[in-house]
Image 1: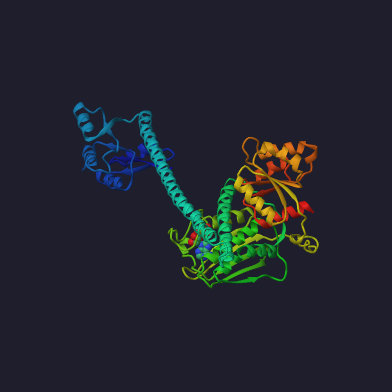
Image 2: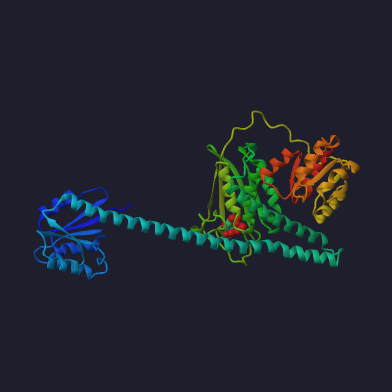
Length: 514
Ligand code: ADP
């Protein structure tokens, strides 16, 4: 806290010294003036909590000084205590009060009286300072709240806009197919709808992830992995976007493997996000480069593009949640402004750093990730596991339990399409009965069911001798790690988050059926 100032005014230096000796304390600065003029000068420079003024001075006397102080806005409110020689008569006192005195002290000064009176003013001033500090803090908080509120409103507007964006082509694609199912463009339309759904799912996943990381709910599944595998997975996911924009992608990997102790899915998500951004923020036909190298004790992964670049003042802000260089709703690129915030959170979880460099607008961008290198596994990794996707899968009897008839029905169509048989049940309480009759090879069980939820249904299955070891797969909108923990506790064998991709479903059913 800043110091408190007292002003001592007396024409005799020895009086000033003795006042100073009496009043000295921590946090108090004593300003000394030997005349009214000197006092006025000091008052211009400092905020003073108390003026102790000798009445009798040559030139400007104490009362005249007080009157001048009253006439000035800056000094009007400063409390003045007059120091008088002997007892002042009542007329003089009256003039003193009129000039603005709050008190009188008589010479010879009683040290205790002077100190206790001065202490009151010291404390009052301190309290005023504290109140002012609290007020400033409250104002700052109010400002921050207003700012957060504004960003939230902007975010909701962006969210609505971004969620609606993929819906328009989906709606139009559907209507076109309905009018003319044999439209020669049908396959192109379906591909387009596929991309839009992937985009929607991605938006929602990012949204959930950001809030989970902020709440500390994401735990990494770390393992010793090779950067090349991360790059492969990320490129696979981003390739459609890169190709749709006609960009070229150069991948530059060292011949030696680079090992990390990291969560492979999250790492692919990080690199994929950077690749997607490079594709989005580069005009058609651009060049994107993805490279990795070991540098000292760090693995460095870099994604660069020759796109629209980022102005210098925005480079430190793009990693903030909801930050966008161009946030006009009609800007050409889609996004919620959370991708890079998520990238930074996930990289930090991995004890790494991410930074951006761009020479400015129009000059392209380079995103650089640095992560601690890990020692590779003791021996060279064995041959890649046999391509499990091509495993021939036998036809399975699948019991589907979902209260949403449309979800259940479309799942049934999918199952048919990949050669499995199915039975649909929309009520958890009827699941067991249906299973006794149908004898499924595997059950796809929704968790959020009315009446009897999926956990309870699963426990009931496990208590039945017939279904002790029936593979049961949780199929749910709840994809958080604690949900996965609760489902495995209830007896589920696997946990799939809706919407499930056909590839994931096929793979899982193949492994269950083998
Ligand atoms: P979104 O892409 O959804 O807007 P991000 O968090 O991924 O959100 O990115 C934040 C902002 O950073 C983007 O809106 C864009 O302005 C800028 N940005 C990100 N990547 C690039 C890039 N490769 N080139 C230029 N600008 C970028």
